[in-house]
Length: 131
Image 1: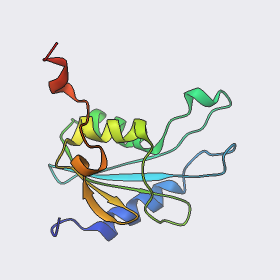
Image 2 (image 1 turned 180 degrees about the vertical axis):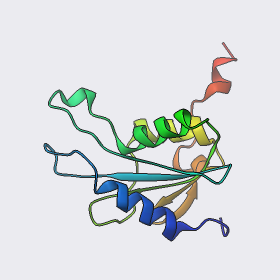
Image 3 (image 1 turned 90 degrees about the horizontal axis):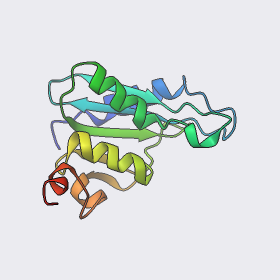
């Protein structure tokens, strides 16, 4: 965790948060993730009048990860309108697990935590092979 430039990731998340489309909740969110190849991928929330099709910032971040050639997330920061770290929702914790795994580190309001602590006993691709 000492090699992760958390302030850079938080700045990138805060910058993309400025692009969020949040006319309904007025709760803009930005996400930035460090990829194992050194890239930083970002995303912002995009709301919709049909609330169920709203896209979380983490969805945009993972879309950029996949569209940019894939890789694995090493570290992730999600921020609110103040640029402060916030916890992702359950759906987005699952997205981060899928693309970063147990060792991916999330900057939480209480400090950096590996995903194995953020989402204990997570369901992942390996669970599908057991059926």
